[in-house]
Length: 367
Image 1 (cartoon, rainbow, N blue to C red):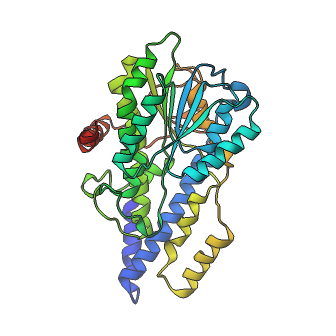
Image 2 (tube, rainbow, N blue to C red):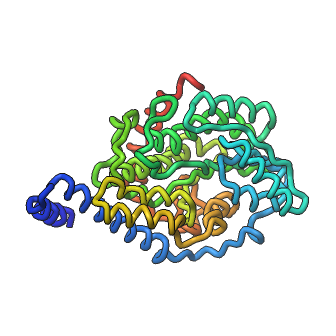
Image 3 (tube, rainbow, N blue to C red):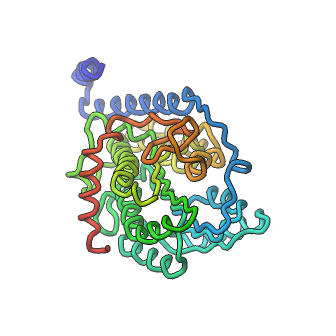
């Protein structure tokens, strides 16, 4: 099929007045169409056998301490189950404090919720965040690696430390955060009746690393603003999240910590708005159509933000085991609790080990 598509594109490109421009445009449309198909397959055709209601099925969290990067909806749902403390690790102090005030208003007997500054694009910020957190708590039961960036306008550039911004934010910042919190997670796992988990947010968008694979050579390069290239970089970062969960479990599974990666679903969120900006620079008619669409349709998705929180909440609270509806350590799940949906690359343990070693070397100066 791939060979056939390439031949068709080659023939159409050869007949175009501006072959290079035409090839870029038609390839972008093909990629967008494939993305739509993939989203429908994962978001519509996947049927979960798991019944999960966060209000009823999240157990009592008394005594447990939770840390979340971003994820206001997660905080809201968890707060009603009486945890000892919730820490929100995020960059924007003002919006986070507004969120905390709203949650306190709507949550009966709201637990303590504390904001700690965290900029995932800055490794020094990650280290400062963990230093603050470690000074404030002696246990950590649940760690949600939830924050991220998706398809930034113009390609996004590099992080403060020189890494491609989607990879640096979605993977490397979280990698360092986890490594620095690992001693606390391990000590918590030794406590009576402990159930320590790490839930990292991945995506079925990882499939768009095909056909290029995981390119280590461009992890420190400014990427092209061309939409398919931007989509590839996003996919690579989400693949890294799934590989992280598997490799973490391989290395640390015997110390009582469970790590899982999840796809939240196709969520109606502002992250999708930049997707429509790929048409900038095209012919005036097409550019005006897509840019206008981005203004009239600010969000795209089949599920609400509330529904999007169900899969990570399920992963954090369901029974650990090998049966349907139970959480398997290291696995990747689509909503809710559906396993086996990841790409072949997400199960490549050689690649997972290589990524871990590469990441560990990059952050060793902050450990």
